Image (cartoon, rainbow, N blue to C red):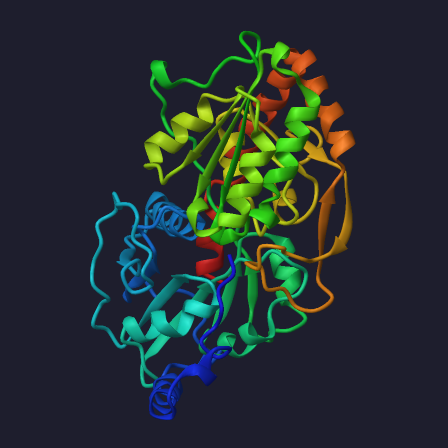
Length: 399
């Protein structure tokens, strides 16, 4: 997810306000690279947007669950209000930042919110906290303004090797790949995933406008579906979105793209975790024509309950996708350009353009061979259960 940094818009502040901001930044802690390992006598804090229904919020919730499942007693500190992104609730017990001079903080925000978060948490230079930033990014090079923000951290955790390798040439603090833990929920008989051997093929696309609808490439996914099937095929596509009204140009393009096809349903709202899981379970395929992903949590979640992830075979989702447990789609690399103006990428950045013709054939074949689809779904569930279990959090914490 991409946000404009405070540094980039500083020129718009009155001189006095800019000076005050610079003083606050100067008082923030600096990573000293000496706080390594975990001291169990000190607090372990997970700070993030626990009451926000986006990927960053879900990452914070998954992080706290992972530590609890591994026998730790972390403190959950909510930053949703601080970052003006409250659109849900948290089942975790939320607490205040501990009044301790030392401890370990895992901060689930992206770089541009780091300084604001540290100020809100009350951390200053004289504190002796091990500060870990859990950062995601979707391209092969980070924005330049992120590099100075890393000075406030002792280390960075990323959800995939793709992100780690993007940061490593530019940031000289430790960077560890710590994949997000994904646990399949216990679904009731009424909510059990739909079977592959019966009923029409049901496809699902998920995207948040603040993460760039163009990066998520929703319109390409619509074209793939519509060119693969006619309404006589008795298939369906659900497009689950957030924040569509903030991007009227995309909304108009999407309306035109789906016009005349009654098999397509659009949902534009935030869902509870239970409702989101039920939505995923009610579909056979999670379709993603994305141009790039830092991880692709929605794909991993779909795989965890035996759904087929059919997605562009490039970037962070290849941390857990392969030809046996999913359907990676072919692509070509191209220069980054977002016509909706959401995605601000470093000059020279590249991302993927999915091969729509090959994708059309792949989804048609999946519909014809439901037995193969079922086997892929089972391989997906087995892989996620065995490999995204949260053990990496403990290993990284004690490194």
